[in-house]
Image 1 (cartoon, rainbow over the protein chains, first blue to last red):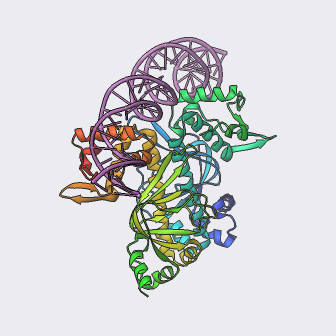
Image 2 (cartoon, rainbow over the protein chains, first blue to last red):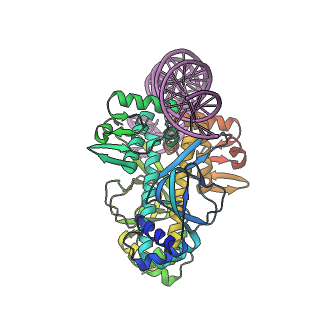
Length: 231
Length: 231
DNA sequence: TCTAATCTGTGATATGTATCACAAAACTCT
DNA sequence: AGAGTTTTGTGATACATATCACAGATTAGA
């Protein structure tokens, strides 16, 4: 079965499953399926029952919420190797937010109930999941700290640094964010307006801290940029 | 040994350990110790190696960070039955924030390495911990959403509702927050100024949505208060 | 119980950022 | 390739909230 072979190959690239033997991976493969989602397709909505977890093999996914006025808050932007949602294990209920594809993605879908069964039989897997969840908690606390203790100018910088770290590729000492985010998307990630992001980005470019090339990609010197954060 | 008996009794009140048999609880009791912390004493600081977890039997603890200018951000306010930190399992490193006692507290201290060993031998415990961590993640995402999508007036209301839910006691259809927080503390929980909290609280009192009695306690009608959030 | 320290309330002012408006540029779709 | 849509840049203005200032109330310490 070629398809199951693919799933295996893809799951092996997920950090959560790294170091697992073929035999250990087998039960997870057998309950999972793979699917390609085009950009802009909705993976799930907040109200749906939380009955599956996703692992990203390729592409980019955004997790977001919208309020009554339609204002969007991007909770996180996830890419290959990452899992979502983080908060569903052994809890009944609905998804904590919406998920939509930003860049065409291949996802492994696993029914959460079956995954939980495998989980409790494999302490190794539990340990890794505890690590992942712990990391997520630290991450969210840092986000909250950024939002509370820093002004918008610095929040933009920290967002760029965060995106650089995860999505960036190092090319001759420069970091390139190879995904194009619109100003509005960047704004929604930190809860500011698109205009402010536009102004801040141009300020940073004038200071030669970032470059905005024709394709819309961002080029950054992270160390110099970090020095801009004084608070 | 009376002391171990106490620890047992105290651990049984922690939701994470509820439903565990005496036999299952025993290994955790044997590695734990109990200690009383007075108000204002520091439990740990951010830079210290994360080598233990705490369970609150009584009292109130705040988890907070401070920036270079001394500005404080209260990450969370925890009370009896709760555990902290949440993000330390199977990860090396330091505490993610500082912890200080707000109200005289009795804490159970458990070395994290030993706890981890017990954890991986008890799937039941793992399941509960996954639930707790999942809840924490949802919680933090909601906090971030509050901060991004709502104005200060509404953030204050949501903070009061949150405090009411956890610390509140129901008395003849009113909820009383039996812990006194200063305006500055409330402000630091949501990242605003003490003056704004003072003004907002008085606004809410004028609307008869909350009451501020002599002892400084807050009395709230949660349903009416919730209706104030229109966004 | 007195004194110092901290907390509260409230007006005045400053300021950062959202919002509005619109033109130009860049994409998208058939 | 051209029409329509979406994005960007930038000035002008509005507004929420921080900051400053200070007086009075409250709490804590000796």
